[in-house]
Image 1 (cartoon, one colour):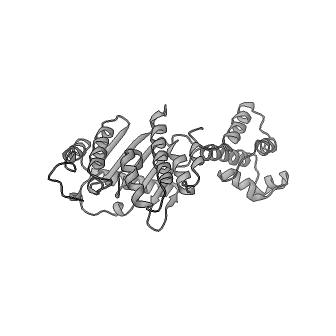
Image 2 (cartoon, rainbow, N blue to C red):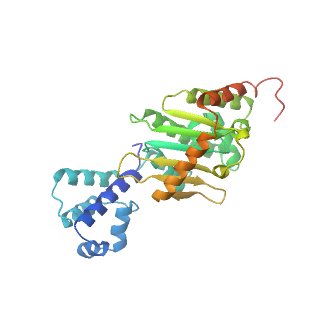
Image 3 (cartoon, one colour):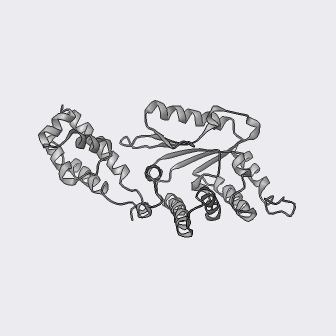
Length: 293
């Protein structure tokens, strides 16, 4: 199955259709009237929320008098891509709408900035650690559902690692994530070793926000900033809250959270000191002196 999923092609198609309509001097109502369809249908295509049909795209391009065959071929191809099923949609019983959007953006973003205050970011988790997290979050899950959640998380990691155009990943972890006990002593030790290895990758910048840095408005929630190099993609912020996730796409909101991330980074330990912090904890969970959890 394709790694990308339909969201990104739909958004790219919608952006192009909107620009072509505006260049043709038409309003949404004009296009809908000429094609004898609802305004909402045209609007949903332009916002990437509708399921595109290649026939509809060809009709719109003809209406906008687009005769550049390369443009036509590109947009018709995007319409086809926008109808395909992503590999993770086979797991629809555990993939919510929010998670579907999250994975789609994660799979194509040029830059990912994570601030995490509860547990290690999903993209850095070992399978055993992920299983411990999911077992705590979904105590009523069957073993089959639990395995699906872990497989999905490992699949996301694998696809990100296989991308030719690897994204730049920056992560700020609250120091508490290194101390919050998940799974068992061996699981924690394995996760710390994995974090240390990840911190040495050239595409990753990992910093620890130490207890000594004190409180900050930015540490009130976990958030991820997705940014793209393509002009056709919308930068986004995902905020994880107890009352439900939020998505922000206004340019001012994305910029505000990007600056917030930078402010938090400046209060963090350096990259090398962050490694030292992680390194200092390796073995402590599995030592004989470690108190029972």
